[in-house]
Image (cartoon, rainbow, N blue to C red):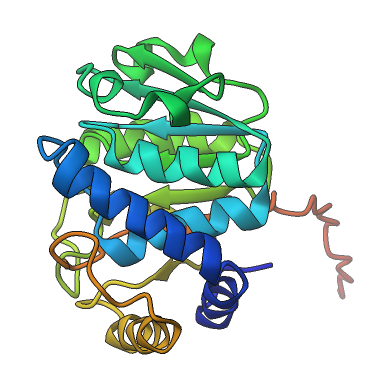
Length: 248
């Protein structure tokens, strides 16, 4: 199923109770148990990440960029609530292992310190969900659109952070590169960015209020993440030379 607004709203309704419990736990963890943890995901994009992982029930999730582990905790909670799946995280700093709760990490998390580009041999096969929140520059985006995304199976769910802080991306940035790649592969994306898709953002905000999920977990932000599925391969086409008739 494509990631659409209706699909996201349905997932909010389906997993409302689990999401309410998780939001309370995350709020406590951030504000009381570990206030040093610095959230990098805004509430809606963190919740959508959780909901999509609940929906897809991936066996292997790859997270590129953990920082203090805020996104890691949301992903691990989804795997825990699914009762299956393993998270493989990569970052050049090792803050996350000191902040992710041990009960969430348990046997479902493998953290690798180092640049994922030099550790591709550690990527699981298959990767069933890819989450990217790392170097936000065109060079890194050119690497993963050229060397990583094409290795994934068609229709693999992917999330990329920090694309739409504004309505449009700036030239030469990660967002510009990945959007150009999506366009070249005629692949749609979904975003709840308040700047890019205010209708999506407002519809989700309204439903969260209706479901009693509106109290912020941390300071609300712009939710700049995009979500898409890797494209289907182009169909093979055989070209037959046109028949021509010559006249004298």
